[in-house]
Length: 164
Image 1 (cartoon, rainbow, N blue to C red):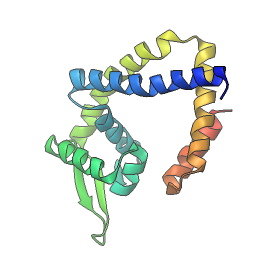
Image 2 (tube, rainbow, N blue to C red; image 1 turned 90 degrees about the horizontal axis):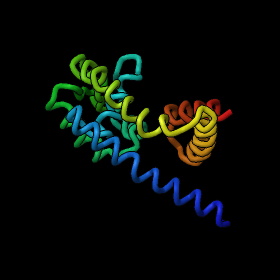
Image 3 (cartoon, one colour; image 1 turned 45 degrees about the vertical axis):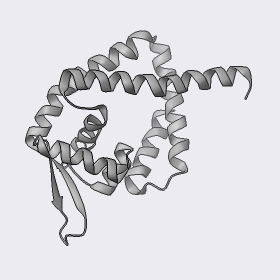
């Protein structure tokens, strides 16, 4: 890596570290949930039936099945998510409950306000466009190397389209 690349890489690593911690802190303080829990609920809400098999949800949420299982248990205790079995009892699904959907809808504006403050308020419109293009290209490349099934292919294709 040359100096410019190294410097850009260090800035990106700093963003990987600082941004999730800031978002997690704010969501815990103002909404009583972690950023990961929020992401799990968003992933479920984006499905037509607000339901995903746990193995697919782990991929979408970027967490291990073990971590996801613990999170689903916490969300179940709050009444926000329910575990169900598939038709033959082999697969386990997570369903976002109506109460969970209401919590997500109440939390969304809180989260988006913080995203705006931390990211978009400090960028020009041209920088936002460049950010979308750059991250789309990086994400498409990352998703090319990972066998994520149908959900992963859709995410990869979306990233490719958005980077243009």
